[in-house]
Length: 171
Image (cartoon, rainbow, N blue to C red):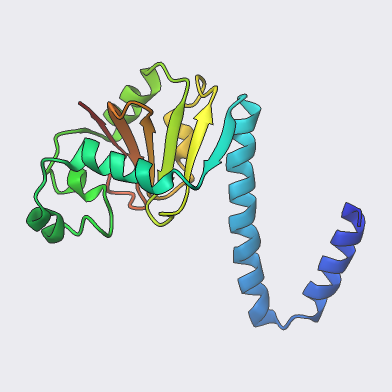
């Protein structure tokens, strides 16, 4: 089916929906468009995006060990680490840069290959190759996203909270 046929079918479906259902469709399309624009922006910069599914759990565990290894299980429970790993920064359990200082620190890094993970997607990690032109502003539309180098020496986190972060931590 070509794109004009999809468009016609979508328009027919939309016309048959009651007004209250259109709100749901709008938000779904809005999220889909946002993801498309986010990925398109990276691809336009020459970034190669790979999905790592089999390796995801191991990479996430390595992030935990690299950036939260000195934080006790008791403190992790107190700061709700399981809910948001970035609480180690917002609760000041790790000294880090915040806000514009975090953005600047990330932007000046030499980057080629990165890992990218999302708080609420424990089954997938992304690997960005050819990421030399990636900057902090590329992640402004994302929520609870963790960007880090493949040697786990630094991490940049953009949260869903406008008053929290972004954070940059370097060992």
